[in-house]
Amino acid sequence: MSDIILGIESSCDDTSAAVIRDGYLLSNVIASQAVHESFGGVVPELASRAHELNIVPVVSEALSRAGVKAEDLTAIAFTRGPGLLGSLLVGTSFAKALAVSLDIPLVMVNHLQGHVLAGFVKEYGKENRQPSFPYLCLLVSGGNSQIVRVNSPLEFEILGQTIDDAVGEAFDKCSKMMGLGYPGGPIIDRLAAKGDPLRFKFAKPHIPDLDYSFSGIKTSLLYFVRDEMAKDPDFMEKNKEDICASFQKTLIDILMDKLVKASKQTGIKEIAIGGGVSANSGLRRRVEDEGRRRRWNTYLPELKFTTDNAAMIAIAGYYHYLAGERCPLDVAPVSRIADF
Ligand code: KG4
Image (cartoon, rainbow, N blue to C red; front, side):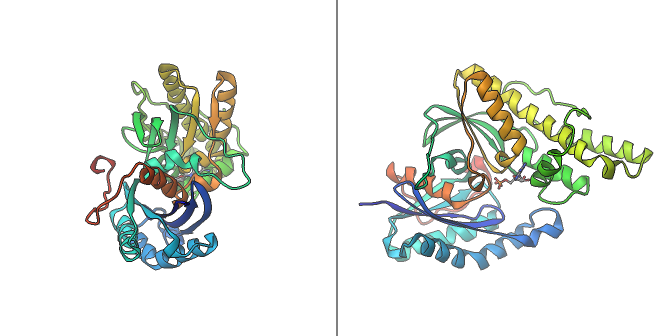
């Protein structure tokens, strides 16, 4: 008999539902929330309200695209955290209610595990290359920057992580500061493609071991742009492509230095990336280039699995389900990874 898992993701500003059958994707529906754009960042209260509006139509659409009836589901997997508490509450409550009404098991998923396992979602008619264990995953998103050693689908070890801002935050905050818009990552990525990455130099942090820091580069960019604008008010407009290219290159250098170090220290050459920032074209190119040079096997997620999506929650939930894990109905969502 097949295992059909419904995944539900609502940790930030995307409401998503996906259906997988025996690890193969049948549907993955994502409703993004445009309501935050004019604020230059996610407004938690608006996010949870939008999840409430979206959750029923998104789940119905995922089931209908998958050609699956609710009664056919084997289990429901949901994101318990980390994320925005109000947003998580909507997905968690919905998943519990549906599981009770269908009398099927409920499985909880750590959002970050979802990103790390995104490459294990199989699709019909595709090659479905997957890393072998153990592998290293550079997990880079709006809320996290980590190097994770993945020993099995359910066994993770964080080798290094940011001590302040996440790299996605650096993209988003700097884009906002430069008046380029939100979310910053895709905007800077697009402008960087047309600029000279060697034109400007920004300070790089000196953090020990495999940890990261991205708050200093924000200040470095801010002072640089402010000083240049004092001399020439059109400086930003005239040079934004070179600024973005140089800034993006600095972020990628910082990420790659520690990833190379982690690979050397562990001897692991199976290298994956995940999370929203893994959509960055410069980072994807660098991982592939470095991989060729260092004889790594590299695994880049498809773009649709980089930002928040329920397919990755469904696949992570599938592994938990297979391992016999079940979630009690009184479980509460958690905003921080430490509380998981
Ligand atoms: O994983 P994600 O959807 O949300 C969480 O943080 O969980 O990641 C969102 C982040 C944002 O900071 C966004 O600016 C960044 O991913 N991002 C990118 C790109 N696309 C999205 N950053 C750099 N280049 C991109 N192409």
